[in-house]
Length: 247
Image 1: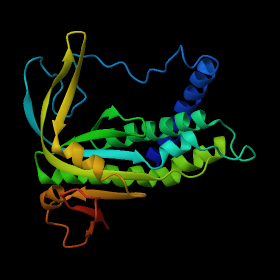
Image 2 (image 1 turned 90 degrees about the vertical axis):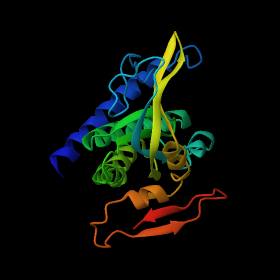
Image 3 (image 1 turned 180 degrees about the vertical axis):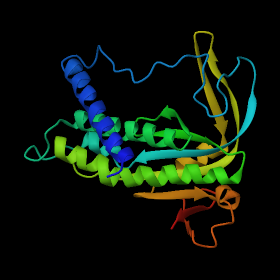
């Protein structure tokens, strides 16, 4: 195990211990108490390339959006596990699973110079600057590592601590320009990137432990791979754009 993998494993375990303590604190009073995952300053932005977003001003950036989706997460909350198997309740299960996935994502995305801009309940949105096509590699390597560490670190921890079955992920990657601006009112402002890449990445994140990309990212991809990377077309419901599974 590499030093990064060791540090990642220890970080996930540390965050799970914190999550367990928080859950135990709110166990008897879930309605009146809430869990806060972050406390972002409205003066700062988590969007890569835009440290500060000014009120009343919009800017345009080139981004690769990465959306990670925990597959069948709703079923994890609504369908019980055999009491002879699981060590935790259904709500605890979802809370600990998302905690592990999110902290893994933070470490991996930061490693490849991207930023998680939103946690989505059953996954997250991350953005990577895409001014040059070689920056595709950062987003792709981050996506590969998210799946790699899911199987080598996250799932074994969840199984060992809580006797939970393996999680599966879907990851969508898409490329486009996006408007960066502040959304909200005077008392509740949030820096947001609004672009087609985010919509497309969301629709492409429905695979099982696989990475899917949109056609714009496929054509933006550097051509120096000598044909080693394969883009296998996949059907994305009734949507009017193509998706590709990276093989």
